[in-house]
Image 1 (tube, rainbow, N blue to C red):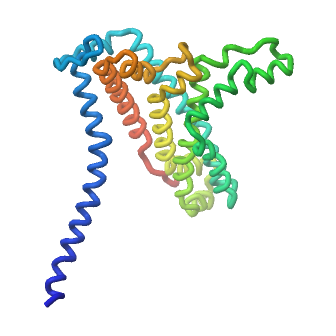
Image 2 (image 1 turned 90 degrees about the horizontal axis):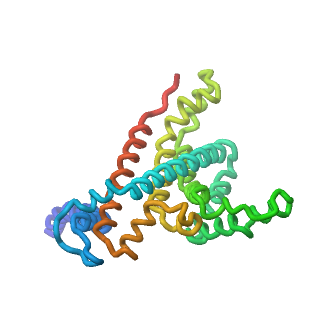
Image 3 (image 1 turned 45 degrees about the horizontal axis):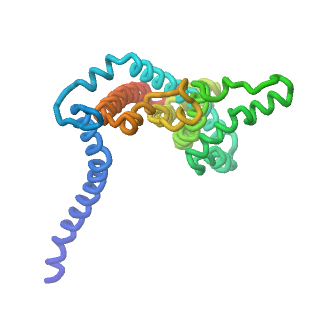
Length: 293
């Protein structure tokens, strides 16, 4: 009798467990993604009057975003700086990941861990390290003066757009390396051996087998690097100065010092929309599979 009662309960328990497994990620998504973005949308449609938020529905904030020359300049500066840093990080990290996976054999895990060591250090400390390296008494200027290449510190290294670009590239490299390394590791060695057995050169094997099968990993790393660079506001403040100001910095100022949350929300949503469109284009370009020719 008990077995007859217990039998229907097992599928019911599995159904409850499956529902709970689905409900928890959905709740996390709603609490940390959907609700904050919904609040941003609502705030962007209100207005601020001397630091006080007025609940009047308006598109004034978006008109200000698109009509302000300063905001447009900072938006484009942020996008091309982030794109440049993400591209350079990808061009450095992907070949490095390829070398580690294909040339180091049993030592590749150790090499991968060495590349990822910076991720174990606080982001703020890594940025401060570059501030010290590029400073007037930093490593570069000390070397230039000790070798009599310059008589005074080179001021163009710190508090410039170049300093922001260099630091963002450095920060992004480990992320691109991780995704590229993972994608390259998943390529079956039998495919590469089959390509060589078919008479394909190393370049043709890379072009038609390795790259198509790993480019999605590189694209994911590029997307992560681009997102980090576009949303970063600490790096421009620490190593960029006024000349290196980026879009994230003025968004933070609108939510903080200026106390204009509606305009800050409109700027944040504008940046989010542009970033999503660019990432969608990258994802489309990254589609495809490797073929043997």
